[in-house]
Image 1: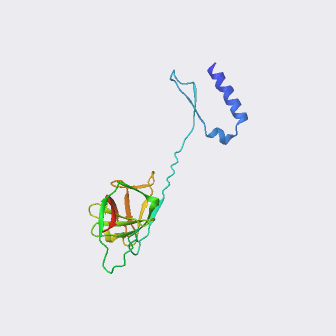
Image 2: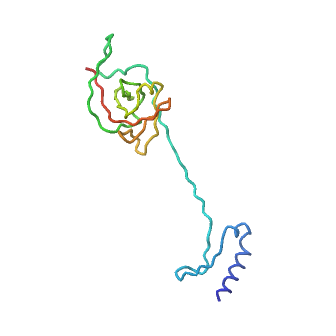
Length: 167
């Protein structure tokens, strides 16, 4: 009975499907009681699509002018640091420049200055030509999660963020 069923299936398949379509199917007899007599097996290939978005912060030439703090002094401006959160929205950032020691000053599009302290072994002077990063799934730049890449080839993580306000 099974042999007759197999012959009928092959005859129907042979007459209705082209030869190239039949070549993609492999017919195998399966002796498991829980599986059907004929198992149609196809070859599946895996395709992986990766998409990456690179966000670039150009090097800014000078310090931003914060709201209400337009100073025209000759000396350097002294800043007071305040704690802020552990993440920043990437689309609000507009530029970067090396800060003192192991810190990088990030400038927002609103003119707010934020200091990012870099991880161990990173030097701020490597970021003189600008900074870039891969956009994360949530659109934020976070402490101890994201890496900042210098155009010179350095990769650094961030230890903490501080908001800079003029004294």
